[in-house]
Length: 118
Length: 116
Image 1 (cartoon, rainbow over the protein chains, first blue to last red):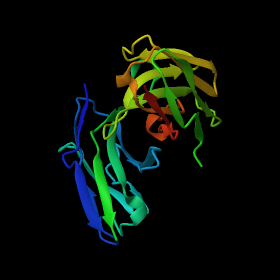
Image 2: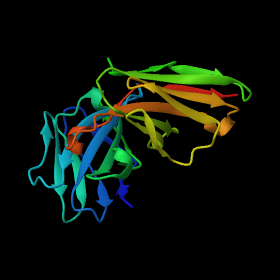
Image 3: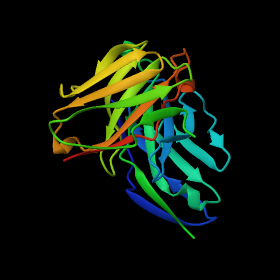
Image 4: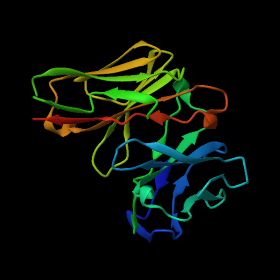
């Protein structure tokens, strides 16, 4: 079974500053996908960024980037130029490349609550 | 605007009531999911439908009954719920292509359910 650990229950950052959210995972799979989802108070889970394990290059999406360390099983999220709209719960999630029953199950971490301070 | 639409957004019901939650998507996704989320916790998977067939039931009590009438709709029928069932219920959908990482789940805004 896979496990995903987010060791920072809460974090805060000043507007326009940079913050890094940590995520570690445990798996015996060799190929898999990792995701960061954001859930603002509006409730909707929004995909922020994804990484395929066999790709060594770290994914980037505008102000969001990841530091993927496969050997260390680490997948941290860096948010640059933080904005007030980045205030949300952030969930790290794992998905196997192959899963029975034709599904795409996600294993979530417990989440990190990020507050951006004006 | 979300591409996965859930109704109603809020629902208050008594323990003897029967109600249904609805979820609709028009992205052509063939996998649909129900999650339960308690406050400050990650979503917990309840059910997965693949090609309109139930493929995963995560040992959910029978007072929750899912239904997938067609490829765009997903319902969750509720009956005789308990106070501990109060939570946010999220629906999600995804494609089912070969490159799984390119088929991330898209979530709706959820239904906030309160059991009196």
